[in-house]
Amino acid sequence: ALTIGIVGLPNVGKSTLFNALTRAGVLAANYPFATIEPNIGVVSLPDPRLQTLAEIFGSERVVPATVSFVDIAGIVRGASEGEGMGNQFLANIREADAICQVVRAFVDEDVHHVAGRVDPADDLETINTELVLADLQTVERAIPRLEKEVRGKKTDPAVLTAAQKAYEVLAEGTTLFAAQDRLVKDGVDPQALRELQLMTSKPFIYVVNTDEAGLADEGLRARMRELVAPAEAIFLDAKLESELVDLDPEDAAEMLASTGQDEAGLDQLARVGFQTLGLQTYLTAGPKEARAWTIRAGWTAPQAAGVIHTDFERGFIKAEVVSFDDLVEAGSIAAARSAGKARVEGKDYVMADGDVVEFRFNV
Ligand code: GDP
Image (cartoon, rainbow, N blue to C red; front, side):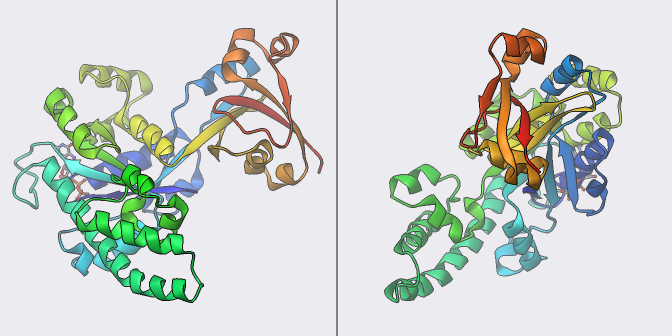
C-alpha cells in the first residue's frame, strides 16, 4: 500500500498527531495490521456514500478505504549531513510515497521549541532546506554517472536532462514538487524525474499544528497557504484531535463545532492524503457489506477488479456499473436498471470515482 511519511522538527506535535491517527484507525475499523508495525498508522478515508449504500442494499457493515501514515522520526537541522538519525531518516523518507510535513503554530510556554520561537514558516524553511540539500547531493553525484551512461547509450538522455533541470531548481533552494509546473515547461519528462528518486519530487502535504486561536486566524491560514502552494495545508490542533478520537461521534461533532470546525483534522488529512497520492475509490455493495476499494486514477475495470481478487482480473468478463448519484436517485439497483442507468462495461472501461460496480468473471 502507498504510504505518507510524517516529518517535522522535534516538539511540533508529530507523535501527538500520529498517536491520534493510529487510535482513530484502530477504533474505526478492524484492520489488525494497523497495530503490527508500530510506526504505521492506518486510518479510514471518510466516505458518507458508504452509509447511504448500506441503507439501499441493507448491508450489515461498511468498509471504508484506508490511508497509511508512517511516523518518520528524527529530522533536525543538519540531517542532510548525517546529523541526528540523518541517514536512517532519509532512507525512510525515500520509501514513502508522499511527505506530510508538520509545522508548529501552537503557543505553549511549557513546550520547548528547537529554534527558540514559534514560527511555522521558519519550521517549514528548515525542513525543506534539509530535504533540498539531500536531493542536491544525490543529483550532484548522479550527473557525472548519467553523462557517462548516456554517452555509452545505456541511459535515456531524458533522465540526464531531468537531473540537470532538477539541479537548477534545487540550487535555488526550491523543492521539486513546488517547481513541478516549471519543470514540465522546461521539457522535463515526469517519468525520467521519478527515476532519480529524489525526495522533494514526492507530493507534499503540510499540517499546521495550531491551537484554538490559530484555527480561527484567517491571516495565518492565508499566509501558510500561499507559502506551501501548490501543496495543500491542513490546519488542526493535534492535542484536540487526540481527544476527539476517544469521544463517541456525537460528542466529537459537538466539540469540533465548539472550535468552529466542521470536519475533524484527521478526516481532512486522510482525504487530502488520499488525493495527494493520486488515488480514487470505486464502490461495491451487497447484504454483507458496502465497501470502498482503492485504485489509481485511470485504472480500467479489470485492474479495478484485481484489487478485490487477482482471479477477478484474470477472469474478467464485464462489469455492471451505476454511478452513485444515479443509484441514489433511482433508490435501488433494480430501479436503476429499469431506468437504463446501469451500464455494462467491458475490459477497456476506465473507472470513474464513485462507480458502484458488480463484476462478472470466470474462475
Ligand atoms: P514531536 O516531537 O514532534 O513528536 O512532538 P510531540 O507530539 O511529542 O509534542 C511535543 C509536546 O507538545 C508534547 O508535550 C505535546 O503534548 C505538546 N503538543 C503537541 N501538540 C500540541 C498542541 O496542538 N497544542 C499544545 N498546547 N501542545 C501540543
